Length: 270
Ligand SMILES: C[S@@+](CC[C@H](N)C(=O)[O-])C[C@H]1O[C@@H](n2cnc3c(N)ncnc32)[C@H](O)[C@@H]1O
Image (cartoon, rainbow, N blue to C red; front, side, top):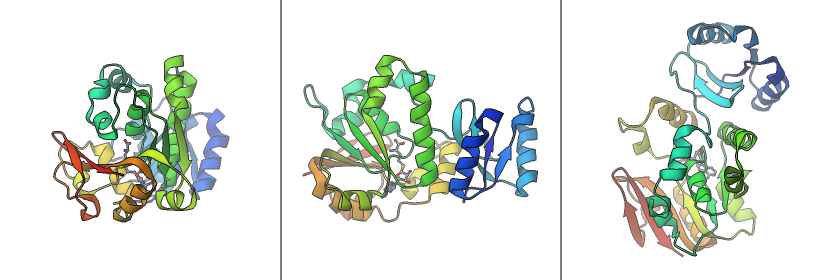
């Protein structure tokens, strides 16, 4: 599922959109004359301009950057760090009692540093940063990196000081984790891995938009090799997020697991 185009909905965004289109080597479509049109008409216009039934388009609008499969899904995929559901989870989401917090070893007085080797849209990294961890996020898919980078920028532009403190603890690096961990002399208390796994695609609960993201990225078939590398870097533990019924990463039994209804965190002590 390759990217088909970049489109923008405001004339003031044209330079940024053209830069992105150049970066991804795809056409750039101006939608600014259609700003009061219905979604269906905009979709039809994009399909016609790109001569494709369901083009995959990066859309640049006043709320930031998002990814959509035109005609297929209404919802757009974007990295959100300030919307109502994210804010609710941040303020009422269970704090250090959350499975993720327990898995990385967050306790009173212990706030580990984390390298998140599979940043995606940064949701797990944001939870950890909200709880006080410093998180280095690695993302290798350029479109996902662009979505995440824009999500962080949008949050900065709209944020309050509390949110700024959280964003200050998040650093995004465009890199394949294999290279980053090998080449740089990095160390971190925790290394976190949440690679795409086929099971993630199946459950009825996976929203259509997320299925699209999974199809766009594909499976992270090389993730088994990350485990040894992660263990060579982690000072305290490696945490691997899996679906509850998925086999262990690299067929390696963890020291213990933290299990929920649909998700499991496997903990490998360093
Ligand atoms: C399941 S998603 C992660 C979701 C993320 N935990 C979140 O909370 O949003 C997996 C992501 O890791 C990225 N990824 C997988 N292997 C990687 C690697 N070796 N280096 C960098 N990024 C990787 C994929 O491109 C994808 O965006």
